[in-house]
Length: 168
Image (cartoon, rainbow, N blue to C red):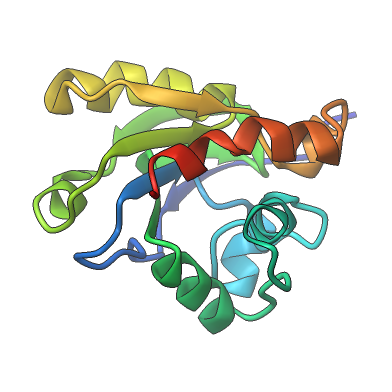
């Protein structure tokens, strides 16, 4: 039985970037756990940070500050496609009444070489709302969410290696 209620969620995190950022990674919307913990991809079983740590041969960042510093030090900008939406829990498939973020604030202030989306919904929403404005196609990566357990950690690392090509 589905006891999740649809809620109107307004994105509470600022984008993470600086003038040295070279790639932009966009999720859909922070999950309830990420909102509770105050940073992107913070669900304990989300594999985003372990995948990036593996790619760069570093320890997995733990705190929001460590994660932000990790992103900045590796020239990775982070944000989400959506500024607000109606959603049930963390279910991307339940999203309705979506309002996109204006990513031009990042594009105007950093020399972004590529945009990546994490997960099919982020890719679909980017293509619908943001690509027509920016004319920049996104490269879709698999979701690192625990809900995407069918994709093994090693497969995620392999798929995410493409980001390294844009950080040289």
